[in-house]
Image (cartoon, helix red, strand yellow):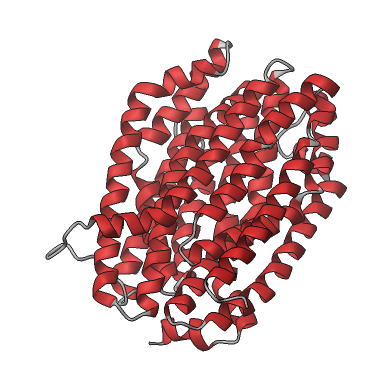
Length: 448
């Protein structure tokens, strides 16, 4: 079949572009609405911007579970499609749908009972805590969209349908971008809802994106179908999904833990430092989306060719994808070094934020090429069914080394020099990913 054969026969440079460009574009657009949220919320007040920064770790936790489960599903699906086990692929897809619904229920309950205590735990300012709670409660009570949307997009990606996956992402993101100013500031007859308007715009975009992705699967993805009649839940299948998915969940959740930890380190210095770090993370997240697009494209390419016993194509993919990823991130380094003030001023940055942020963006951006190495190797090994390398690489760069080094440097040298902790954590993570991936490829007789 054309959709699967291209991963076995298309020239690798063309295949990487064919698979990754739609993902890059769609992820950039999706990330753009986080930036747009921040830009509009910053116009409400700096406290509102700080509130969304405090809420972001919980949003990342939802993303962690949705993306992690879907990555495990994608890797297992692509291997079975490569081996032409289409009946099993339908059972796997249905298992993923059940897991998405279960995750939705868990986070709805957390949103109903824990949003307010979570907000109050990170700030003593009552107004900031209230704004954070209002934003989080809406995002979590109506979180079904993000789980179903992510699942349905990965079903499309597993068969090489990255263009259709892009359509659903873009629909959701553009909807959010359009609704943000309307609902936040009360345009064209709508009431001004402030920070709650930003949350409502986000969940409407997610729900619409989910609906489009499900429809595209129903009518344009014949290789994978949900099987509700005759479906049987399998512990072996669940284990295979989370063998890759659980490390990815942990990896993604580390971002949530890291942001919460860094916020607690920065808050004694100033609320402006917390607001800046939220802005930095949104900007960095936007920049890293092309890298994520490459990494996510690696999973089905590696998984399909490993299932088809075509190991040479896996090495060929790495020779194409690693240099491309490094170039992408070097462009990002140049942007952060040349235009730091202009990037921060998108978020109505005042003098205090500029004083903190301009040198910090330049310091951190030096490490972006190292991030490319860690990310691409981690996703590639996930395609082989080994999510541990991805998890540990991310743990080193975002948590194990970064947080304690940031705390130590802030105590010894002040906040202006604390950011050199990124140099240490990213360097060690890239070295670990390179050595562990080499060992994993040799173990599978892919690298001689």
